[in-house]
Length: 190
Image (cartoon, rainbow, N blue to C red; front, side, top):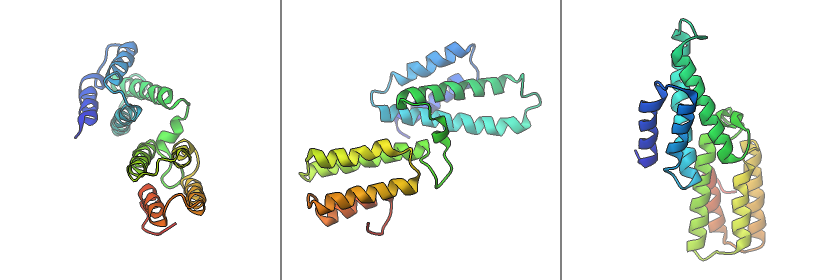
């Protein structure tokens, strides 16, 4: 468990179980977010909170005898609301549905966090290998902003960009194949 996960667990144990007011909960979410400089860490923190709170809410709801007035339900619903608001602010859009995208169709929030990590890995490795051309970085980094596409369509876009880079002979085929495998977890070549 790393620092971000520990802080998420700490937050969950102290603040979600019971809070005095919605404003207090919102302020506590914001206070914890100030611990992280990188957006990736903020998103990982919020995603962990969202996943855990949603799971607890889904487990509690069928057993709840009075869902409309239940204090636990109210706490879970408020927490989910504020977590989603922070995620929307962080991503710059109101796309809550993407956090729970259907498997195989769109990118879930976890998928986007993992993709960001992989794109950073690819860009760092290309830079270390001496492929510092701005064009390559822009082409690969642009994929980060295309996660509104279905996964299948995103993969086709990735293949197209890699074919363009290959035809321009800026990168070796082995390097292009490594980029593809890293971003797709696919052992087949593009």
